[in-house]
Length: 389
Image (cartoon, rainbow, N blue to C red):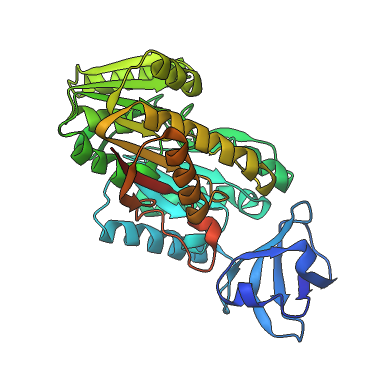
């Protein structure tokens, strides 16, 4: 018989408000038994129906609720949800390069689908979704007839679900690099070996926004440049851009993308960003604009303290090498580094740098990555433009 879970008293409030996750320590008792990854029904302490989701005893998130009415867990549900998610992006003007499905925000917890032209990239982050991967591929073929579907479930978070990392072709044909157009620029996306699903789609609007601040810049430094999204946008307006990353593969991608767009004012620099910034400081080298878009420094609550110090130190050093009247554009993609905490860190970094700093613009993730007001985990990206006097 299907699992039935009864929550402890008052533990239903967050979930009734729309949050999907039911933690194991919030459950008072479990009745009946089925296989792991099957559909479980969740009730409040007094027996009120809350919703249904896939159960996984190996995870601290015991159930991820995605059915709150009488819907059936079948292919038709997935077809409707995926189509609705894609229709939303289409209504905003996205055409060929965007996040099609953003997990909890699209009522499909733990499922990520990105579109790169005629290629779709799939990421399955829970046992229940992973068990239904073949059906999801069928839905994508019926709805979109893609050239290929590639899986990029090679992420450490799957270990918390008792799943191995997975990566490979699921359907059709996928080239090593897929060409897309973003902000009027051609980009070669490495869907097989690039970061995440190949590219950081959540920064697309923010990458375009940097052009304004680079318009009068003779020298721009893009740190943690990855495949060059910020670098290329900056190069359309600035005199010269230095793109820095520790990955030679990423820098090759930057150079390829620069050539593809006929941009000859981008120079790549391979190195550890922390060391590179300190070296520039020692050499008294300064830039009109410095961009910091690092990977998440903290992926759990117990890492926040160390991550805070790392963010503060790197931002303080970056502020010191910005020319008077220039800009520091700085980001964090960790939801554990909340907006108030990130802003507090920037205040301390400014004090540490000895510079007077003004906040000019604050942005978040692109609209194809919507966040749920009831789930702070879905609101994760911080993007600050700071004017350094």
